Amino acid sequence: MFGPPGAGKGTQAALMVEKYNFRHVSTGDLLRHEIQARTELGKLAAELIEKGNLVPDEVVEEMILGELEAHPDVKGFIFDGFPRTVAQAECLDKMLEKRGEEITGVISIVIDDATVRDRIHHRAMIEDRKDDMDDATITTRILNYHKKTEPLIAYYKERDKYNEIYGVGSIKNIFTRISRLVDKTLKG
Ligand code: AMP
Image (tube, rainbow, N blue to C red; front, side, top):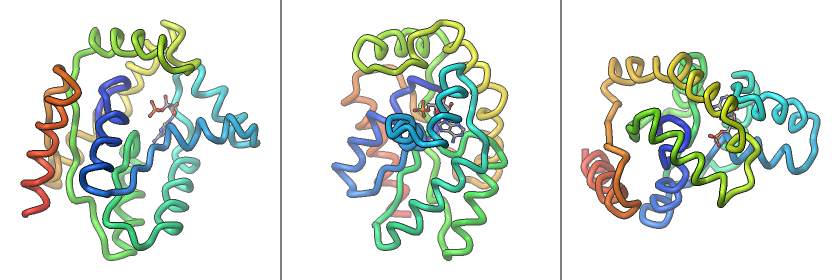
């Protein structure tokens, strides 16, 4: 699942888990877990996340490797919020290749920056995320998305893995769009 912060990746991933029985892996959730558990990694992550910056590639790559190793028998993974840099994408390709696997497809949820802000402001009233509370942090996250994450669009287009879904509409309608795409992709 690919897209800017607030695009609805997590919401849609949860629906995909129900329908397709894939395993959902969100690096953001894993990092928030570390923060709650007050681990050393959590302390490092909290500082970066609260300012809207990305955590180092090696940190999230290690987390993903742990997930792959811990769940060798799943039907499939939904990666949500990972990869977020070209270096992470290259690392993921290598990790999967070693296992004789590859990315099946990228689902990119497209919304504009103004909608990103609206969605995050709305989420701030529901979830207790420090990085959703502050406008400067939200701006940094949007800038980081354009600068560091958006280059992945070209990366996956070159590999013929990239699919776009328009991300405005009801949760149900967007899920219908995603399901159509997943069904088509799984059929090959
Ligand atoms: P998310 O829940 O996906 O919005 O992630 C929340 C925050 O965690 C992001 O703003 C980043 O600071 C950090 N984060 C999550 N995933 C990654 C990743 N793949 N690479 C670097 N930082 C990440």
